[in-house]
Image (cartoon, rainbow, N blue to C red; front, side, top):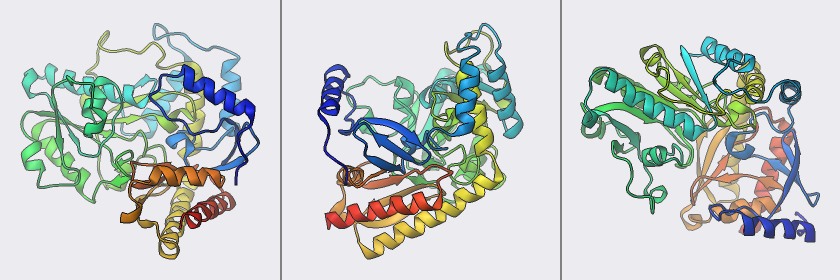
Length: 409
């Protein structure tokens, strides 16, 4: 069990509560340093990190290759603006193009910005083809999460994120996720693009059903619409392939958005664009002051090379199987958990009916037992361990989860 807060930590937390805009509810802890899959707070308590900062620190904390890239580039050049080229951004763009379906890459600061760029690109693509504004609708899916800007929060088909921010921008339509029959009504001739997560993260770790993405591809081709895949949380090796959509054979998207793990812990997003729409955004049509920052891109390139390795990706599948089996055993032996879904090291444990609404309380109880996990809504525990977590840390982390659950019984 963790020790109580020290007066210094209590004071710092009080200052944070006084000075922050109160849009977050941080846990009562000051995290101070990390190493590998473990993290320590300011009072010396150790935690096993099975949340990775919401899939950001996917190589754990202080990974040597990332630290080396950061140190080298930070001693050279921090910022240039997009008025000039810089080598780390060019090399990262080259790596992404050479390793994926993409022909061109746009860099920004976050997943929301990557999705914002994809939305603008889709509308611009339709405009260039003479499609009138009223037929540039973008289709998204119930349970989705695409960001917090006005466009991306509107694309997010969850009313709780919309409340109080009306009027929302027009031009979006929502369809039930994984419902092929509903596509007949919602994916129509006025659709210019479909935006979808191969595995919904904030929506409860809900994977696309087998064949669903392929059917979206087929219908987009028939309509001349673009298929945009939001891989911000489920991409960068999280499922055991570089992108989660690669589990759907022969699928090629038009646009993929990335962020979170791309920067290895630093803020970086990217919009990857395939051949069809590669030249849509011409000079002056979009931009980002910090996009393509040399420090961020140097670290991201190191992270990409570490993650896009067949040995690591195979191990993600192995560890994902271990994690799923252990959670299913916990469900049988202890209860609390109803079932486990997801893929690789992106798993959600849905709670039994009498525990629904209590995911946040369980996450906090786990923290007091020295393990950091996440929730995906009030009814799902979310597990996003480092992709390179070792067997011992994974087992010890799950031991602590079990201890927390047993204490609740």
